[in-house]
Each structure stands twice: as C-alpha cells, then as structure tokens.
Image 1 (tube, rainbow, N blue to C red):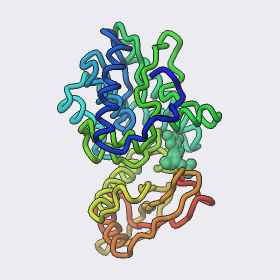
Image 2: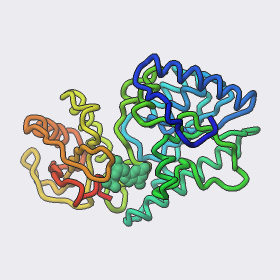
Image 3: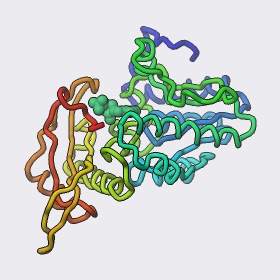
Image 4: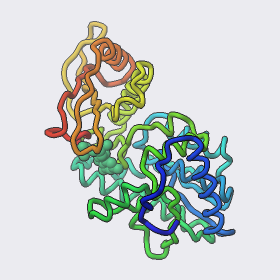
Length: 327
Ligand code: XMP
C-alpha cells in the first residue's frame, strides 16, 4: 500500500469479515515489504499503534521491536496493560522504558502549557531515539498513521508523523499499514485481531497525557490525584454504561486549594474537576448531561479515595468557549 490516497471504491470496513480480509491482505503486503528485515514501533497503547503492533506481530513476529515509553503521564493501569497484552499474551519483542523521573524532573516548575507540551514531545523523541540507537539493523519505522492524519497533513493542519523529528541518522523507511483507514475501521480491525475491548474502544487521549490535566507546574502528588480521580471516573462511567457512549471524559486538578472539613478536621486541599463531552470532530463540543445520582457517587468516591482532594466540581462549558482540555 504505497499511495496516500484512499481508492474511491475501497469498501468501508464495518464487519468482522471485512476486517479479516483486510488483515490477511495486510499480512501479505507487510511480509512482501519487509522481507527478513527489522521494524521498530513506538507503542503507546493507543488504538492505532496497538492495531499496527498486532498486525506486525502476525506478519513478521519477532522481527518487530516495540518500544513503550512510560513518561509518567499515562492513565492508571496503561503501562501494565501494554506489557500484559503485547509481551505476555502476544509474545511481542517489547522494550519497556521507565522514563518517569526523567520526564517529571524536566517538567518540574514549568507552568506554561505550550512549554510543557514541547518538553514532553522533545523528551519522547530523545528517549525513543536513544532506544533505537541501541538496536542493530533496524530498517523500518512502523507508525499508527490513520487516514484523517494524512488528510489533515495535506491541509496543513498538522504534521502526521507520530514520531516526526527523529535525528537524521535514524531516518527509517516508513511502514504504515492502517494509513488508509478511518478510526472506526481501525477499531473494527482491532476487534478482529483480538485486542481487548478496553484498548480498542479507548477514548481519545492527548499525547502529553495527564500532563495537560495537572494544570500549571506538575507536581507528583497532584499528578497522582489526577490519575486516581481519572481511574474512578472511568470505572463509574463504565459501570453506568457510558463507556463508548460519551466521546471523552476525564478529570482535571487545578493548581489551587480551598478550605474543607473531613472527620471534624479542617482541610486545605485541591478540587477535582469532572469534564465529559461529546463531539464529532473535536472542533466544537457539547457537555454530556450526567445524572445527579452518578455525579454524587463519583464525588463521594473521589473525596474518600483520592489523597489531597476535598471538593469535586463539574465543568459544564461547551466548546467554544472552553477547549476540551484545560491546557
Ligand atoms: P482541545 O482541548 O483543543 O482538544 O479542545 C481537542 C482534542 O484534542 C486532544 N488534544 C491533544 N491531543 N496532543 C494530542 O495528541 C495535544 O497536545 C492535545 N491537546 C488536546 C484533546 O484531548 C481533545 O480530544
């Protein structure tokens, strides 16, 4: 698949059968493209890179090396899930890089959102490049580019290369097996490949991860409050049947405190903000109308279980005027 243009007669992949025939075609094409050479993939655990990894494992097995960089800004349980699914269940050649301290040290004291994004992006490339340099004989870089990335990069909206900016000595040939697919098709293919439901139906998650939800300068304790409250929110949304129905939902912990009372004692702690939105294209968004019952349940769990938090707020701002993320 060399062209970047989706053929007009290409059928939309909506069923398991169509997904299976796509998978079989891709396996044959990947084998022909790669031969006995080696391929490297940055595996975030997101839908696109996970589907590419699963396809490549089927096509070329251990000629693929996956690198999973834990930058400390992932959601609760994500690095563990990547290791379980890819290393333990699919037998992938997976390099797990614990870069938590490295990222959080670089981010310490940095409060400007765009500077935070730049630090995270640059550090990611540095860590990935260091791992790539340790490996011998890699000729291909696999990427989870999907068709909207190609369309947006043609329109000049964004550069589509997920790991763009690698140093010149690491310029590999690209291998992008899902680049002509839309997101919904990637999910159908992911299911047909047997990836877990939670991975395939994952809501969108920004590259800078929880870093943009720990508003202002990131501290480890406040980041933990973001991670723990996000995990509770996801659990309760799943229990209420909202997983896969609400487009994106998460928590934010702003960098201010307010007075409260717990067990008769005065507290001075952070609030957690709940944000749940629906959108088609992320350009505009409406707010999901949560039931009081659900909000009260989530509030009592967050207050009881998340350290350093004494209040829960709900953001009911549509986009515009509020962006989906707070930074
Ligand atoms: P905003 O906050 O701009 O978000 O309304 C729109 C969508 O984009 C995601 N988002 C990002 N994704 N890197 C990403 O990969 C980023 O820096 C980033 N910022 C926002 C956001 O989660 C939402 O889905």
